[in-house]
Amino acid sequence: QVQVMESGGGWVQSGGSLRLSCAASGRIFSGDRSGWYRQAPGKQREMVATVTSGGTTNYADSTRDRFTISRDNRKNMVYLQMNNLKPEDSAIYYCNFKRLMTPTYDYWGQGTQVTVSL
Image (cartoon, rainbow, N blue to C red; front, side, top):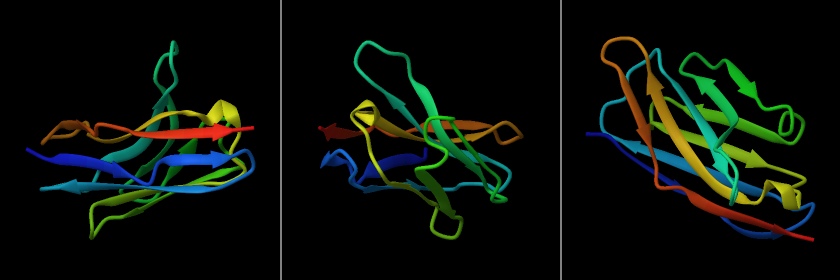
């Protein structure tokens, strides 16, 4: 079983930056997609950014110009550089590895809290 662990969350003032890291232990196959999702209190979990093993990225409209997702396939690591953070970015951020082809999988981490104050 693959374990996924996020790190790098914390508190930052509005306009600041944070870098989240995500490590997957165990076998990760090519042809999957990893990503960052977030969930604020009382809201549904939403996609922040995703990246395929081939490097294709996708961003939510609210994060496209401020966040950058990257991936190191050799290390099974995914990163999220967050710049110009806003209070509305405050949430628990979750990392995900998902593969729709055989072998299929859908791994989630426990999440890391990001709090942005005015």
